[in-house]
Length: 124
Image 1: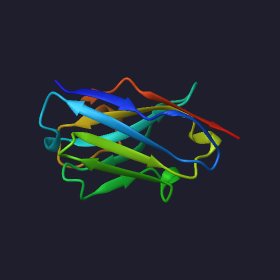
Image 2: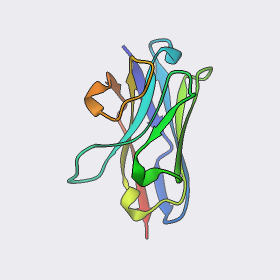
Image 3: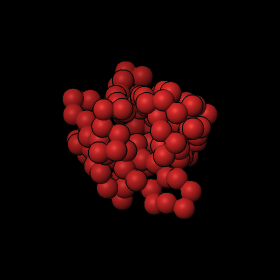
Image 4: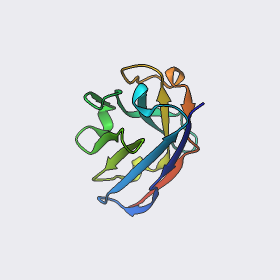
């Protein structure tokens, strides 16, 4: 079992920044890849970013490239999502997820465990 707890969401003005954190417990953090997904009201959950076990490879959805950065600190069992230049369309509940593989995936069903989500609201 892996427990994931997100934090860092909140209300920000368009153009602002937020950093989301996801703290993991239950298994050795460095043995699984991590991903961030988001879901806005009335929309499907969508991939945002992923990072492999070591942190050496990252993957992004096209709509966040150049604005968001995923990183991880295996010593702290935490993955981060730095979000800059936020837009109103980035507003959603953001979820972190873990996957027992080396590389991250774009595909939500590939992930084994999910956090409860953290709300991000962007005002225009």
